Image (cartoon, rainbow, N blue to C red; front, side):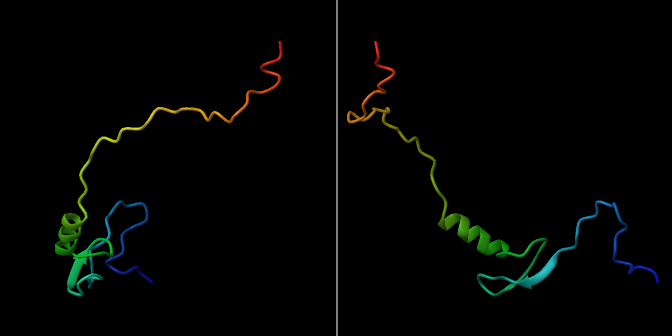
Length: 76
């Protein structure tokens, strides 16, 4: 029995063909390599959830005052 014509030989680095499926977000037809939102939905999602990078200042660490030193460390 011979393999189907669409099958690639073992060890080849051929990429799989694009899949056709309904978009899980809008229900329209989508064709892509992986399952997910269509191109127009991806653009809308990126625009809706775009974040802006900002610098966050962190306060310096100050140890608690209720912590007592180790008895052996203070032994003279």
